[in-house]
Amino acid sequence: MGSIGRRCFLASLGAFTIASRAVAGDEFRFDIAIVGGGVGGVAAALAAARNGYRVALTEETDWIGGQLTSQAVPPDEHRWIESFGCTQLYRQFRNRVRGYYRENYSLTADARARWNLNPGNGLVSRLCGEPRVSLAVLNDMLAPYVSADNVTLFLRHKPIAVDIDRDTIRAVRVKNVETGIERTLHADYFLDATETGELLPLARIEFVTGSEARSQTGEEHASERARPDNQQSFTYCFGTEYRSGEDHTIDRPRDYAFWRDYVPKLTPPWPGKLLSWDCTEPGTGRRRALFFDPTQAERAQGPLNLWLYRRIIDKHNFAAGTYSADVTLVNWPQSDYWLGNLIGVSDKDVATHRAAAKQLSLSLLYWMQTEAPRSDGGQGWRGLRLLPEVTGTEDGLAKYPYIRESRRILAEFTVLEKHISRAARGGRPAEKFADSVGVGWYNIDLHPTTGGDNYFDTPSVPFQIPLGSLIPRRAENLIAASKNIGVTHITNGAYRLHPIEWNIGESAGELAVEALRTKERPSAIRNQSQRLTDFQTKLKERGVELEWPSLP
Image (cartoon, rainbow, N blue to C red):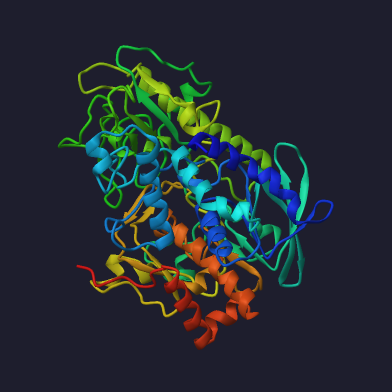
């Protein structure tokens, strides 16, 4: 079966397998139900299914993969990612992305032979590729389990209710957002892998939003007082290419006048209008000059060229005539939306802010096409073309907003700034967690917030993922499997990226398996020395790294 036929076949699997686990009408029974099909959700499903358990995986959009696909964000990764610092399964995903390009694309001989092929040669990652390729690879990785009826996909389904008995979840009610059909998923264990921690309020599980008070966490950079509504901005990403000599200017967006003249009110101050090539340098509050030039194919000295930052297609990697232009994904400071939250507000407000964020992204594109200053003294790049084919949408914007901050469980253990901040560690490694279930590394990177905080970005040291951060203090059969783990507003900025979310999800899936196998609750597995040792041994056998090697 060719690659296109295989993708069509996989796209139909969700519909064909739904009936297989029906126990009565719209009631379905599984061992493990994973709500949310993003990076963490897919990793959790793969982990549970490879152990032979029956898994439900729901996803609000029609693309699994979250940040990698429906949110159109190339992976943010640390510099050692090619050698260590991620799970074996995540490395398999990365290798298969490269293999997909080699198998299905007309690469140059040089690009094909390059072991560390980077299709877009983007600056943000050593593997910048198309969302559709990540989607195809993730579907291929799930395909054997879907075919064997270990995994049932519920695409376009969103959780709407939870049936609880004291501290135990008995079932989750999900609704097809297109048809309105509702289904009830029964399971022994439930994993919340949604982008915003949607199961937590539905199941009345204690959680935190926004920024904690310094008196609560003791963190140097925490707020003076708790501000639950002070949440990081979100973004609607989009893809674009530049065709010199052509005019692909979109219709003037409805809210363009507002965004063209909008001056952010942030602390430290933003240096002028949002739609400009200036932003604030994290940590210093000084003006940082950026620029944009789609005719520049390579990195040059001077300010960061945003065109190269998240480029996902470098036409020079492909045979002549394959691509007439490079392709880049836009997820920059100018596209961050912080005028309202998606968490803790009404459905009407969510819809309002999503629509406004889309207007910001379209206004940014229109400004780049018509008014943006160019280094040659001109204005605008009318050859910029919006690419709906990259995002799989009619409007050309990502299917789902890029969410940086979720509801976070009140966990058995919460990671604090003092555990991972380079400054707080004073030259020492990160805090060593005896219950480690993985590793990660990324700066503590906070984008502007709805409460008026400007960028905050400070170095961390390579850290571990403690098992206690995945386990709620009270709920017995729910496990956090995404950005909703026990971190703070501050440390979330380091734990929210692709390989770390994958590790969290994969370890959460393995934890549910271990709980089913041993008939012990997750908390008991963590808090009994031998049980924890046995579980960590299994993780290592599966290729999950629990600690970092000695690093310079």
